[in-house]
Length: 82
Image (cartoon, rainbow, N blue to C red; front, side, top):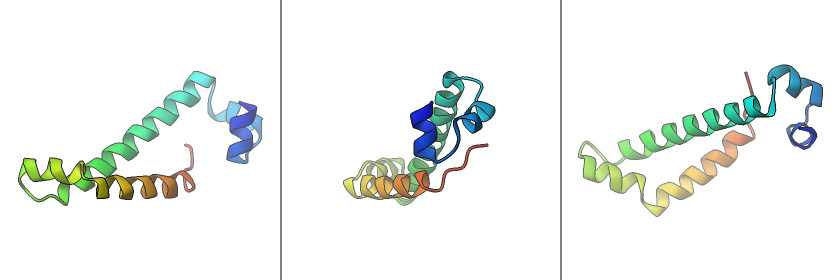
């Protein structure tokens, strides 16, 4: 928890106040990761148009993965925990 606190630039006591355990912290991280992935996937699929085949192709294209990578990097720096 000390390393996580240091990387987040918060005091360890702040982490323990927000998350009762390491499991709770990991659970919150996973929930956030799934949310970000769903948002990205839905947006990427919609750029493919109305046909499901085109939506899948759009979401799985290498270009969409590069956009996702940049988006996640930017969002990680803006993350706030609630």
